[in-house]
Length: 633
Image 1 (spheres, rainbow, N blue to C red):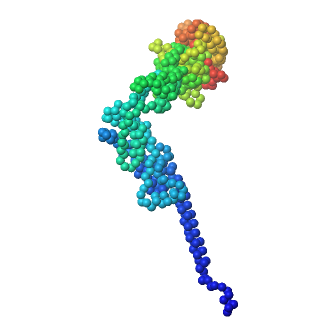
Image 2 (image 1 turned 90 degrees about the horizontal axis):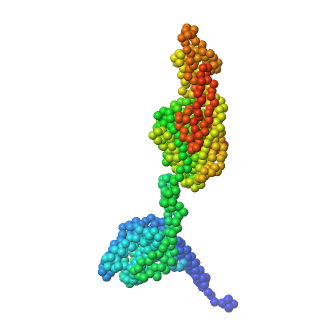
Image 3 (image 1 turned 30 degrees about the vertical axis):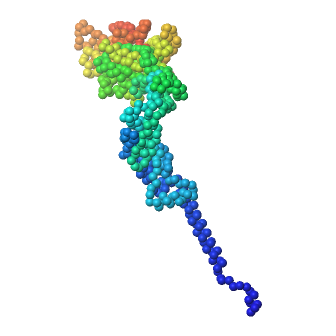
């Protein structure tokens, strides 16, 4: 037994191990709580607004800063709309009310300044819980800025308050003349502390309660103007006057204006209080002023042409209608002019009537017949003005109202497939203007006005008329023609095939020839004249049935008494160009050349008078590679 007692003292089972467990558990709980709080701090430190966060009554709880800024930017103006701020001078009780609608606006994304004071990281969790469970709200102060209208309204309210208080004010005022900045320096004296009032208004407006600002009257020297702000209002960049493409009106020039703010500040500092300071502006005169542009625009006649309009009243009307469409058209430098674009659609609804024109080689009454006289006269004027021809086509047959090679035909409405147009480009450095009209003597005038900077003008001319083929008079049988008579077919009058060489001569202001260039050779087709007769009279007129020519001897009908019958030839087309008085051409100054055409062989017993060719009218230059006689022209 004694041996057994030597084993030592007995100890209660489990006592020492239990204390360690409790400590471990407490440590774990503390660690979990600490981790939870750290997590809460991390959650509270995010760029997210806490619960119960408001700005001027607008709930922005739980929103990110950018999201809250967008919401406030939309809703704060409405919150301001019903508010007023009262400006009060405490000693006299004088007040002025200022409506807040449109007075201020949210300023950028820093719109929730001073809300959710999160403190440092480990404090933020506790403050977040306080905001969550306190039951109150955290009212933020928005970052607001005055609108331009709000700035002026506050200034007007302060001026009104100044008048009611009998304070003259001491602000420096300024005005701008055409040449100088005029500053009237203020004087030291009693004044409303405007800077403080504006700051207090912004603070008062951002709250949720009644807004009232106490006005402080101070003794102060005149406040210095914001010269940089004045400079920005005065500043103007020099701009040339120009002719607007849409309105075709002159946009006035702008004289550049600027000044050095530091120099103006120094000049005002050297000026006694209450005195006027005149500070000259830095003026930059534009290269093209309104006056100089007005004087130079369309001042010179660059090209001029005139032709006499003959034919039916409808033909004259058509030429006049086309002239009306041309009149007043303005082309800017490098701009192309299209005759079809200006004058079509060629329809009765557009004012045109029916007159003779070439249709598939025949002369037929067609709507807008005769307008080629307008296009050709314009072409001539454009060559006189030395414009660049872009598109030009000669007629199928030799014209009468201008000299051969100086004509241009048009066909079809603008943009229509297969149409023929006359186009030229304003190749000057200034706008040009067209003038076109018919006078009471039926002369068509086309003038091109612009700004002549070179003194060089064109003197186009055509020469070397060559008869390629004389037309013949062909007789065709027709049962409707009374016996013993003939009738000319008005759709098939005679035209000779001829060619003309056309040149452009450039002459300077002193009359010296600068250059002389051959433009092209125009070739015009032949068209035989047709005379209709009754088939019974084929022998009477001596007509060869195989050729239709009057080449046989006339045969008197057997029933007639030869002594009583006198056979005369029917009227025959001569193939000659009409005499000058019928051409309507006004020749260029000094040009007297006439070219006699070849005379066709007359029928037996007839003689054909030789008539002079009319003097030619100059025509514009065709573009490079231009087709002189297109198919179907």
